[in-house]
Image (cartoon, rainbow, N blue to C red; front, side, top):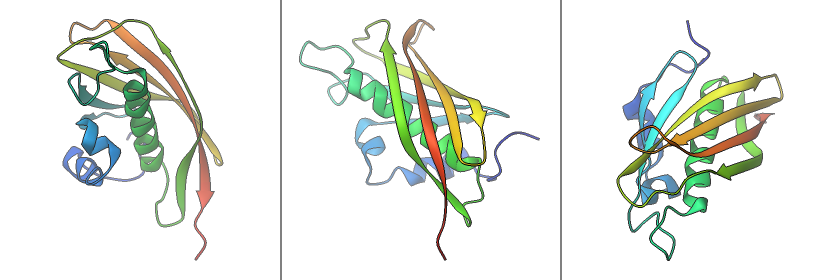
Length: 142
């Protein structure tokens, strides 16, 4: 049994992106593992900065999307929800075309906070960006 409390599919997660920034950027979840998620994002006109390189903000949007979804899957959604507290990113290598793949794994899953690492690589597996997001776990008010 994995870390995710919510039993879902990649298809269901991708439906959550309808009419969101993730949809506009072309972010697509591809794998739900025992303790990780994977997603891809195109490197194209939607995610470029003016010099034709992958925009750092697009990488951060991918990381935040992935960390938020992973955190949400680790709580009982009828009782709690997760929101971002802090995110950081180090941009290691540029990308001009194709796609990047993000993999997120937990560093800490607590009762009130979660910390997730997101590694973003290019099509040949080179590290493009590494990010860490801290999520607050909040109780729903009924």
